[in-house]
Amino acid sequence: MAPGLATLTGGQGSRSTGFVSGFVLKLARESAALTQENLAEELGVGVDALQGWESGRRPLSAINAGQFLTLCARLARLGAPASTGRHLLEAIEADQVLSTGVAAGARWVDSVSHPLANSVHRWAITNLITWPVAGVMPQHLAVFVRRTARRGPVPAQPCLGAEERTRFFDHLQVVVARADNRREALLRRQAVYLLGFDRRPEIADWLRSEWSRAIRRPVDPGNLTGLLEARSASVALAIAGDCAHLQDFVDRATGDRADVANLNYWAYWIGELGEPQINDDFMLDADTRSWVGVRLLRHLVKRLQPESLQLPLNISTLHSLIASRPALLSGPPEVRTTLTKILDELTSVAEMSRTSLDQIAGIRYAVRMAER
Image (tube, rainbow, N blue to C red; front, side, top):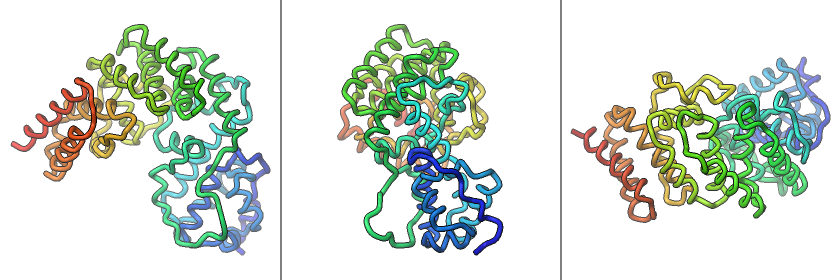
């Protein structure tokens, strides 16, 4: 039994306080071909403590920072991916959002202490938050390849119980109803986005009214709050299965400043714009030289799928990206070949608006220019 880690037991908590990070911990353990008994011995803790972490009853957020770093380093040395620590930290942040909502239910939580108001979320954290709700495993967790058999029937993912799910979404409704549109804009828009995963019929109706309110006034690229309100409502409706409003948003949100804001947000969303952001102001930075666009190009091309709920936004963003960085298509010919093939397949099976078809035509022209 390893010395010095016996205090890594954490505190007791409800299941919703640490169950996402606990599940990621289990994935990391299994990727290292370790049983709970093996890992507990390596860490110098009891099996009951490890089981508590993996189930979420003992949240990883309760252990101190030094112990957490030791845990992550030990896992990596035992065969888990080197990125395990980062994934666990992101999962803890997702747990904070979920546990805050479940604990608060229909009560307001001040924006000073609300985790949705702390920073602009990237796709990794957002997908971890929605994992227990939507049932879709975040793609970045594919690095954890299980190398040990599971014993008996075990959950395939972290799950919120029916009551917990209701309390979480009820809390998001309170947030969007009470948060100040400007002073607490980040908190509100991130809550609106997450409401898109609430499958209750009345929520879809509410999102439509939110979209109508946001879109009633012209989408002004200089008014970042208004622009993001309309975007969040449109994307949330698309997630809920109503894609028509997203196309309308794409048609309205035009102009250089809107394009810059959209591209900066996407670059941040996928991690190409590296620095963490505590508000949305960075989106209006006209100097976009802090990110290159190679990762964003790959990300968007992969998402040019007919079944994509956000297809109009993906096409529009790819069009803006290539227009602002045509050199992205001047690399290996495989990039242009793949993009052309995907566009051909897309236009042969998907029904698209005039705007999307025009943008695809612009992308095709840029590909031909890059081949000269």
